[in-house]
Length: 308
Image (cartoon, rainbow, N blue to C red; front, side, top):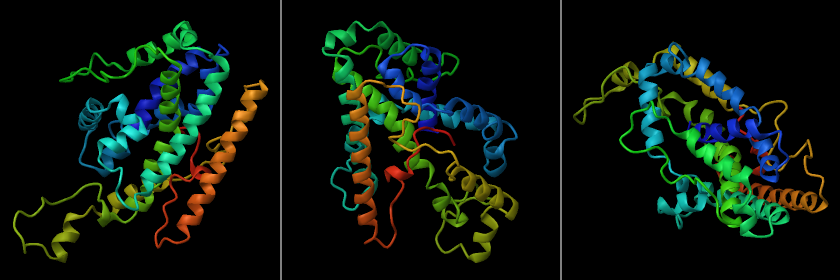
């Protein structure tokens, strides 16, 4: 939900400005593909009153809104910056933490690619500062994420940029959007069936309160607490559908429309793809030695955009 919500603002603003041929918009175009449509579908079928979530959990529409509001109150720009997020969790040195290891490789590949493209079009920080389209895009995305009708204790997204002053700030900003729409969404979305497909592992709801003393629980109590067959089948069907790749899926590094015609940019795309291929091979080689492979951040399994 966090990745979907964070990307939706950028997607809407990108559509408004897509008539302009600006390098940053062309970079973002593949990464907002179908996002608005899938979000509309989610509001209609997943989180609406009578939608799937209200059928398989104890939440009604108002409860879903409260959960989303609570999550959004803690969402920050830095939490979308992968290196900073890992550091904030104190997970820099955790052993065999493949989400971090693979995620850092993807983040660095995207960052290097975006830097190479930005450097082609902007030869100074002043060019970034004077680009009215970039500054307008950043400000509109910030303002669009504010929801004055939602009563929050603190302002929403206080650290999200309102302006960009340097090329490095622009590179980081674009890297955040691309990484969130592609790698971060893949990491949290495509493992849902693996995790939730075994209902006792993470039941969508419970029919009995948790025991308050040890020794009270037997198999009969457990079975009476877990969701019933109907609820369980809907939950499994939902996460199965959400974990599927699309037939026409476009994966990270794919630019089928080739909006860029300049040779330096084409070379940057080739370098980006080559780096992603190397990361894919490294992950596959590592997974061969694991009893349980981690493949959610393998570039050949990372769609370009939030489209499911």
